[in-house]
Image 1: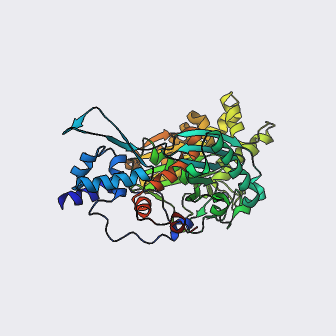
Image 2: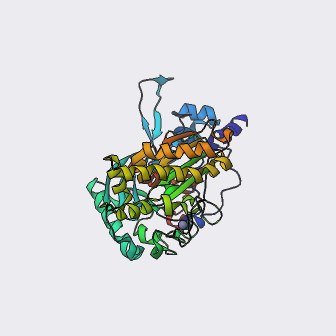
Image 3: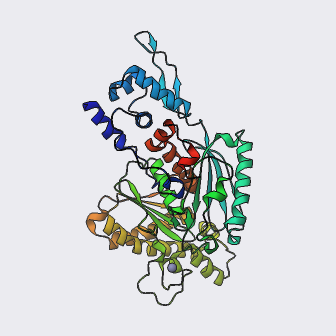
Length: 430
Ligand SMILES: [Zn+2]
């Protein structure tokens, strides 16, 4: 009994960090009341993923399961393509001691990270390493019904280019520039893409695939990418996306926080002090974004006669030494830091991660941001605060899209449902 209690504690470390209350998952019945004893296939995968057990004998030792029971569960994981066993030279009692590991190439994930002006696409392995990636321009303003079929077409072409077929796809992860109501799988109150509001996106993306389709707000997806990287054990983290708009992803106690209506993290629409009457694209005035967002800088530089059309152009001319662009980026950092300091004081994060297009000019932007964050936050909240660049740079969104699917397919819940022989389409409400 002691061992089974240990297992329960051990596997808690690998609970899925994506909030799974999506439209696809809503139809899934609640978890069974207890799965702590005997250990399930899903729990055993958590032991393998966390390197706590890499052989059948280690699994048996940790779980107290008989050799036969361990074999049955490992076989279930292998049948799902999630685990592979490599023969090793060592042996125990004359039997080969196979090393068990996660089967990263046991399938692929399709990823689409949508910005306002470009869409990044990728085919990724199950461990989120990218097999193929590219950027396309698409007419997002025409609405998802017209835009998304072209995105899916291109993803299928990329899939085929990788020598993979739709049967290999284990999930589709999508990031969009605005809040997503996960119960409906639709964007809500979108400032960047209003024509996408209230349209269920998963059916447009799933096509004939029998797999989960997970959609979330861009900054949340970037935060999920951090949970997949070296900062995975950080329990309190803020991920700032500074780009055309400005948003923040919030991890509290290891869990991504989206708020009661999925509207958390809209840092860019918090009003600044000492500013009057500057109209924001959200309809309010004096929002942080209207002063410090990429779109506001583009507008200001165009007035100065610069040939810039996107925040990436602003970064490019700043890096070439344009003094106005450089000054605006530093000032943007200061303004973002001003608002962010309230979040730092409120939440006391261990790490603030900086990503998005403005992170392309990391030094001037973060110099400004540090200045105001440290000036305006409480001393204790910044005593051990680390401000760092995002782990995956320009690929942050794509890795996050793949990581959403990785978190789901490796979750105890998904595995144990599959093992129970449930029809996957039924489980995903399709
Ligand atoms: Zn606003």
